[in-house]
Every structure is written in structure tokens, then in C-alpha cells.
Figure 1 (cartoon, rainbow, N blue to C red):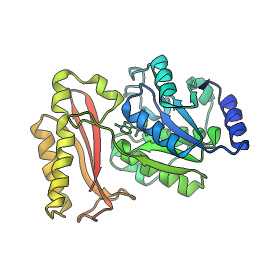
Figure 2 (figure 1 turned 90 degrees about the horizontal axis):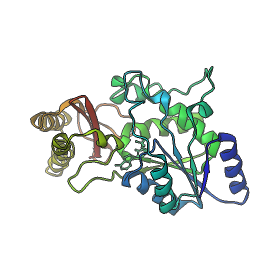
Figure 3 (figure 1 turned 120 degrees about the horizontal axis):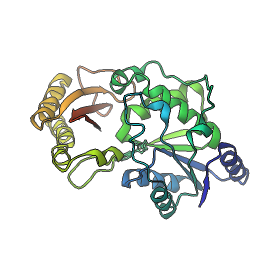
Figure 4 (figure 1 turned 135 degrees about the horizontal axis):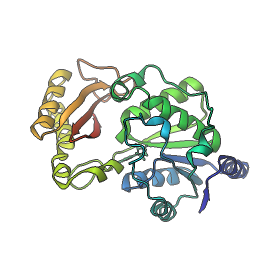
Length: 279
Ligand code: AMP
């Protein structure tokens, strides 16, 4: 497995692979890799001849009051996991290698990025789009794999790819969960054992919504209210519980069967978790 810290060197390696006719898959991550990330690498590997994993805690997607400095970093463990999972190259740039000190361009999606996570984190998706656009330019992948865990992120990236004609296919990979239902996340490391136990309320709320829909519920407000109640009963304060159009993320009054999603964000003791399901 190759590893690169310099964007130009990674670009040259990718260009050489493409000249040999090899399809390249890209898996962007912020490291501290877990089984969720590894499932993305495996999916990319199934579809592509070469898989590039980026491990970069991207400063531009964190607001000043967020956890950029505290975000867990485990470079050697990440390299080992990438190698064992079949990645062909890992990209671990320093922030200075990605952003010139006087960098003055960014990529901004102006509609989907404003709601939900964007309402809480107004600069977040511009940071995400900018770094993903840069990674697409550096790697020029045929396929990029993102997790459904960050549902809004995939929708925003798909919109960016469509509107700016990036020649890359975006694959949305299923959420990988712990045995008790909690979606795997690098930020789960912040949970106390007690909060770890009560955090199951997010996946429980999603399961309850799926059950309600299976029994014929189509009223978005009722589904949202039930989810909020489940979160609150477990001591988690909902930021949002929203039934939305799965592509546009616009709020729905009535479920569009097969094209809707329930998105949740909840806080407890300064920690914030997100989860979602298609309905
Ligand atoms: P992150 O390192 O948190 O930026 O995540 C990198 C990629 O892994 C993103 O596309 C995430 O959506 C995806 N991811 C994170 N957690 C999970 C999970 N539990 N299941 C599937 N994909 C995930």
C-alpha cells in the first residue's frame, strides 16, 4: 500500500494508474477508522481496481466552537486498517498541504446545505464541498463512496457533482451499527458509558418510525413527534427530527413511500449525535 502526504504526488500516482486503464475509487474520511469506514473501502474495492482512502481532519468544516482540536487522531492504526482492508493508497495531508495560507476560493452548495445540519452549522457544508472538490481534482476518481450515516452530506455532494459536472459516480453506503443499534461514529469515543447506553434512543426512534410506516402511518408530523418523544424520554434533546424528501431534503407533510427519510440530531451533555433511516 502506498501512502502520500503531498497532493501532487498522489495526483501523479492516480494519473499513472488511470493511464493503465484502472478504475479508481475514493473513500474520503477524517480517520479514527471504524467498521463503518472499512465497509466503504470494501464497497469501493468491489467496484474499482484501485482504492484511495483520504484521512484528513478538514479544518474548514469545523466552526471555531467545534471539536477540531479534540477530534480523535490515530494515524498508525488507520494506516494498518487501510492496508488490511485492501486500500491501495492512503492520503494523509497536513492542513498546510491542502490549504494555502491565503486560500480564497471555496465551493458552496446553497440550498440543501442550509437546512438541518446546516442550520446548526452554517459553514460546515462549504468546508465539506471544498475539500471533497479538491480531493476529486487530486484523485480524479471514477467512484467516490460516502456513508448514509451522513445523509445530508451525500445529498449535498450529489448536488455539487450534478451542478458542477464532476465526472464521478457517488455511491451511498449503508449505515454500519453496533449490535445494540447505535450507528458507529468516531465521536462515539466521547460518550460516557451511561450516555453510550441511552444513545440507543436514536436507532430506537428510527425503528419505531419504520414500524409505524409499515403499519400505514404516512403523516410526517406524527412520525416526527413520536421520534422526538423517544429521544426526550431517554434524556437526549432533539435538535431536529425531520421527515424529508430523500433527494432534495425538503420537509414533507405526507410520506413519499420509498423516497423519504427520517433524519435525527440530538444532544446530551455537550455531545451531539446524528442518525437516519430511509422510510
Ligand atoms: P468521517 O470520518 O466521520 O468523516 O466519515 C467518513 C465517511 O464514513 C463518511 O462518508 C461517513 O458517512 C462514513 N461513515 C461514518 N460512520 C459510518 C457508519 N457507521 N456506517 C457507514 N458509513 C459511515
